[in-house]
Image (tube, rainbow, N blue to C red; front, side):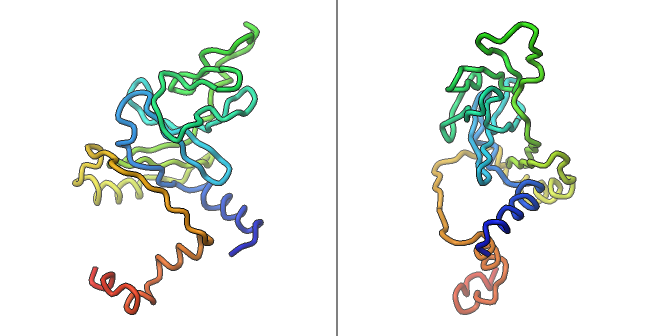
Length: 190
């Protein structure tokens, strides 16, 4: 549970290979709205582009590796690196880089994309090169959440709870309910 090498294996085999819930789509109401999402040391930026599509990119400038979006959420016409001002369109393409030689192919210098799916008002991301099939997950999410019209909701308050425990202990405690009858009897009626 506490071995750093095992944690790295967990990150590689679970968090960087499977679909993860990134947040509600209502956080991205209009073009240019974005929020950042962290997985260990990986930073992502999830945004709504000029065509209204939800996109996700590694939040790293292709020039020197600086984080582009430093705020947790915001609104931007373009993503601009604060270090050397490289500028990216909302579709991730490089649109401006000072002193870049004309013979350089700017098409190859866009932001690295992350797989993203928006379903029933929720945004899911996957860092894998080849993500697992999302069809069954999308069907399950749609069946249960579509009637609630989450796309029409809004975030009124957001809190972050830091749990000073290993993620596996928290997950196991949540998934098993041996302790529910004595500790959480209200869960037993659900």
